[in-house]
Amino acid sequence: MYQLNDKQIDFILDDIKRNGVEMEDLQSNLLDHICCIVEQELEENGDFEHFYSSAIKKFYKKDFREIEEETISLLTFKNYYIMKKIMLISGIVSVTFMCLGILFKFLHLPGAGIMIVLGIGLISLLFLPLLFVLKIKERKETKDKVLIGIGTFSAILMCMGVLFKIMFWPFANMMAVSAIVILLLVFLPVYFFTGFRNPETKVNTVVSSLLIISGCGLFFTLVRSPAGSRLVGIQNTRDYINNERILDNEEKLLMMAKQKDAIMDAENETSKQLLNLCEDIKSKIIFFDVGVNTLGEDFESKDLWLGDGRIDKFMNEDQNMHSKIVKLRDLTGKYNSEIAAKFKDKMIPLRSNLNDSYQLRSTEALNGIIQIQMCLLQNQRAAR
Image (cartoon, rainbow, N blue to C red; front, top):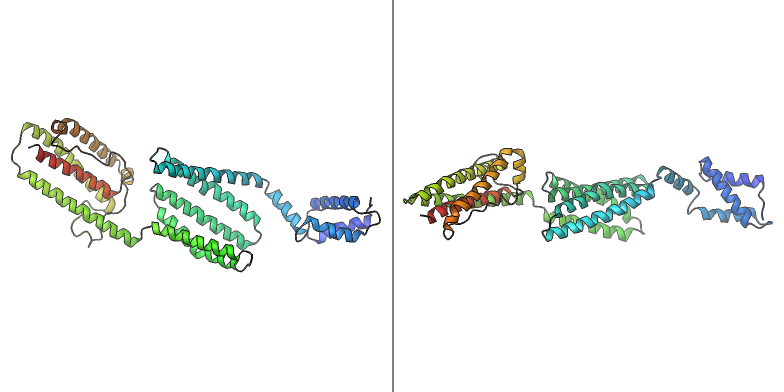
């Protein structure tokens, strides 16, 4: 068994310090460990310096400084493995929620929306932030850390944009488009040129860059451009005005009918309430959507056309709107039970799409209300 002397021990300690290890506790621990190895494995008359130079290389890959850096990382990042475990679990749970939510959505089963929201929320607010913290600890250079931060921020922004789009919340398109712009104009150029210069990562960098561009391109195919939204809005407004024309013609034809009876008088009273309520709701929806109560033939020249506003948003802004829709539901139910039931073979039962879901676009709601009015007028003519 080899016995180290004081001079050799001082030599080992000086070498540890000279190689960048500054922590005194770590210096002492390394010194004890190295001394034990030398005394146990070196022969009694062996070459100390040769054995030491070969044995010390087993402690690191490049230099001694790695040991202190890893020690500092573990001391300052005590919960590394716990965070890594939480990250993996949150990723698995979030993906499971999203897959089940999408499946439930296709099968029209309850709970789809909740699972999709939980899945995207976990990825955006737990998985990706933890991934960012763990990855940034593994990188030494500042540019790598900045690149990871930009990529993570873009991914979070993209996920939140998709979530807001699914839930019909505001600023969805703004977040998603901002994420894509950051990815294409900031993250991708830095990532590509940094990785392309390294022969080891050249192929992976090119493939990853192509996948990022393809993903952004696929997303843009699902987003309607402002010009496209304008054309769709104009066409929807034209369809609505044409429906209003048909409704006016039906009213004129009804006025031409002369015969009345007691039953029709009662029907006219209920129908009158429904017609007036429908006109009131239509004017409210149009005002919320375009800022005016009615739309004329010159709507296009005034840059006024129906957009993609949601009825639930209007209801949140005006509580009277909710009460009017509830009243419409009650009156249509009364009409179907008391009036239309007496003329089952002649009359068309009233159906309001507002009764089924408040998350309707303004054009869908307006056309549904016009259908109620059309059915009322045609029922009055059929009952004569």
